[in-house]
Image (cartoon, rainbow, N blue to C red; front, top):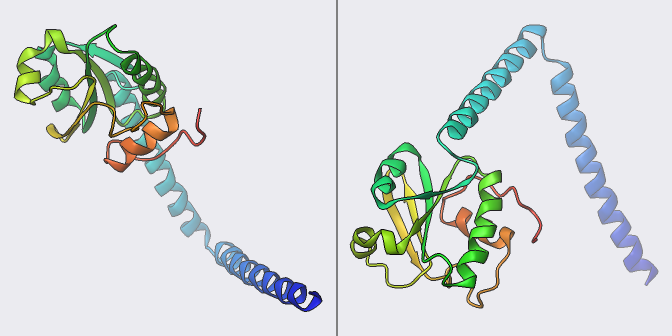
Length: 188
């Protein structure tokens, strides 16, 4: 038993030594940078931060960050305004699972400005429902680069039991390419 413990301690020490060597070499590299190289890195980072801030401001102006109820005639113009749009087509008040989904989507929208989140009343959008062959409500319509990428009928794509969390929906939307990262880390 003592022999196994000694082997484990040795392995842990080797890993720690490797990490320390990597950190030391990175610190040495950073310390050896010249002032002009540091300034170039700083300028590059500032430009990146400015671009991100401008992008976030544009998304906010276009209504990102909340869930918007839209009409059928607004669907395609709104889809053209955003690189990514998630629309929940449902019948208000008819399904507790849809209402639960909308609550979770609202939380996700706050954290993911890169995607526009909308809802569409199925009774007020018969043309779109027929065109997309939507027969199960709620359905998620995923739009990328102004084109309908997927139509997910029902909630089976999110959870086969009808029970889901904000984080699980976020991860699923991320897997479909609708979110650029997963910000909501814990299951709520």
